[in-house]
Length: 468
Image 1: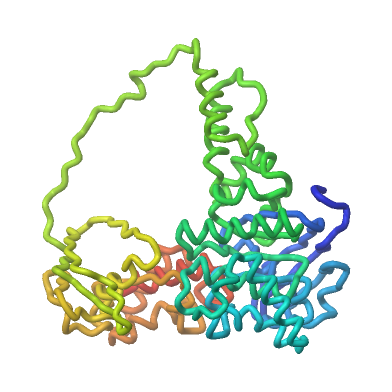
Image 2: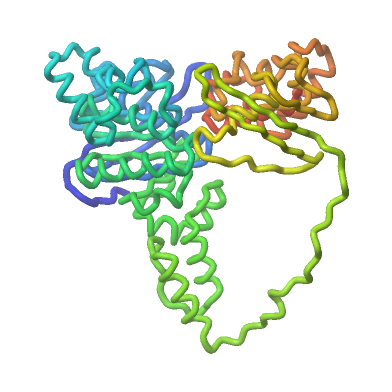
């Protein structure tokens, strides 16, 4: 179903699109039909492996021109048949922003990075400067032209990546989980910018995002994918109100407001009409109070016996004493950290960008050695331990799973670490099988890791740690 919102002009027209990756027997995309109007804001949802990222990479020809494989069907963007153009020729029509901004930043300074695209198209200097200035003004970074890219926060880097794409002046901006590696501040910066691009510049937006509560109010339309097909298409209110059970069944988290509204509708049989998904919490609370007035409520059934939380004393698993770290430029990364974590604890380490979270973790896994202070793991001072030896006691999962994937198949990836610590034979096979089972990767044993979705690659990275 095609939902018309802002204009009658169709910006994206996809008909009967199917695609199969090289060396794969089953297609990743199956008979996709999708029409998106000029100026629409579309939220594209689906569980890991549903085909979302593959679909958006078809829009500028990355799939199949770079990936190879077999593509069938038609893709027309702004009147152009994508199959007839090279990837760089589609840059003025479709800009894609990926999850990790570092994969799209190529220059030393912000200004040079934003100018990178127009320069590579051989544009005159005056046009390059015009586009760079405009793009940096749009993303609010006009005073940061000479800043080194590596000094920026995650949110700032993502804004630079967006500015570099805007400098190509595309008609469509596609964002593939652009906030997945960002803290709340960075997430707010990026999503605020995306909303302005849509509302003030009338840019067509396709957004893949798992932080549903942050983005549902931005979208005109929600498209849901499952197993390579589009299974739902409509307004946010319609999708999240009528499709509640189906969305949950395929592993898609719903906005909190939708969950509350669904519970209210189920709890009050005489409740007439569904509350719209975009209702504010204040509105929902007022409606709930209205519904409860005059209704008998058995408060006793909501009471639970208070059981004091008690823990069995356990020895420290990790003990940090007076840990300090200063970087080469004189910046203090850690200043007198004292921390004890008992065995079996689940600890959340939180803090803003630059607070020292990663610096502290890098000491625990041996990437950084304590210059001052001591770290004990399982009662042992780790200052003289090698990273490989520590890996058997402390597993570390990076934000980007691609930073810890090294081989050509899922099975080989799980063997990689075990072989490097000199394990052999049946011990390796037992650990590999157990990790595959725990992370539900059985069907991907022989797949190349980079043919998996990001979520699947993240599960593979976790499995490789568990195998150790």
